[in-house]
Length: 52
Image 1: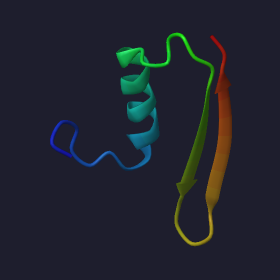
Image 2: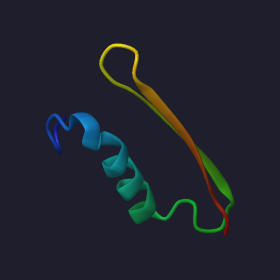
Image 3: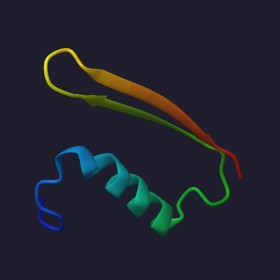
Image 4: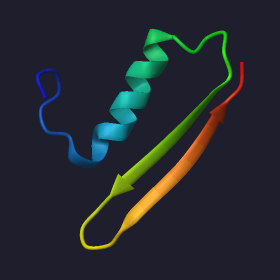
């Protein structure tokens, strides 16, 4: 909140961008699971695999 304010649906891309910029995954295989919930019963889940 301090750096970006309320981001609503842009939160996931911002988090991924910050993670990539920090390059903490550089020498590792990683798996990321993204889950989001919307109004009523809408939801979405995705698993990404990033290989070194």
